[in-house]
Image 1 (cartoon, rainbow, N blue to C red):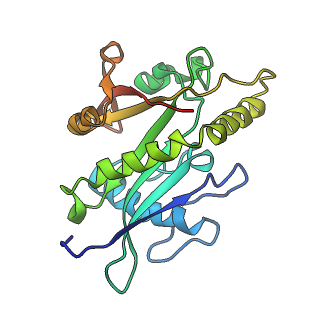
Image 2 (cartoon, rainbow, N blue to C red):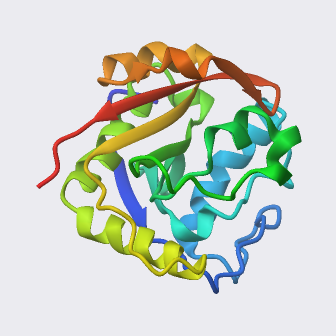
Image 3 (cartoon, rainbow, N blue to C red):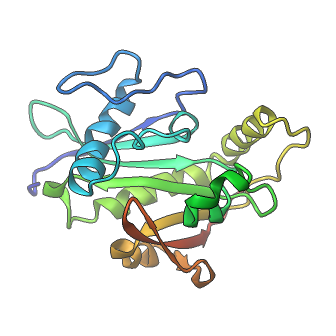
Amino acid sequence: MTSNTILTTKIQPPPGPNAKLVLPATNSHTATNPTIFNDAMAVRMPVFVNEQHCSADAEIDDDDARSWHWVLYDSSGTRTTPVGVIRLVPPPQPPYARVAHPEAAEDLPEYDWAHEPCIKLTRVAVLPAYRGKGLGRRLVETALEWAGTHAAEIDAAAAERAASAGRTDPPPHWRGLVLVHAQVEVERMYTGLGFQTDQALGRWHEEGIEHVGMFRRMAVP
């Protein structure tokens, strides 16, 4: 990344429950995936699977189809290259215990309907050559800025998930609560963005990487 690098951002709306999202084939775009989603995977796979040794089979999950995705591109050359990504998952979220204690997941509900609904920022990644320039922070700020003006869309997504789960009462409105499960090494970045570590959640490992739970309250209309 140079001083002349031109960075642009594109958003992929939720692909939807009927989307057949699959891992893109090597050096090609998979026709069944939205183009921007494939670009997101062009960052996620090298970072999470190749670099951090997370499971490729688990890289695409149930949240991908219902989430908003942003891809950051380097548009300064003859090609537009994806270099960073973030995902915003609308409510509801799984109970914390499903994440911290996956061995007991079968005995826990799929989603936490008892607590205040929150959005969750996940799959934040930047390619190695573009790190150290504040691009992770830029991606988080981009997603939060969007969320602050699209609360109705977030509520609609939560209501759709509630209906698909057979719940007859609509979930409470989203009131600005944001969650991240942060890798410990980037906890400081999220602190600088106004997130506070929830010490009550302790620390746990996802894909062998130590995480902490962090929350932020943002203003929404």
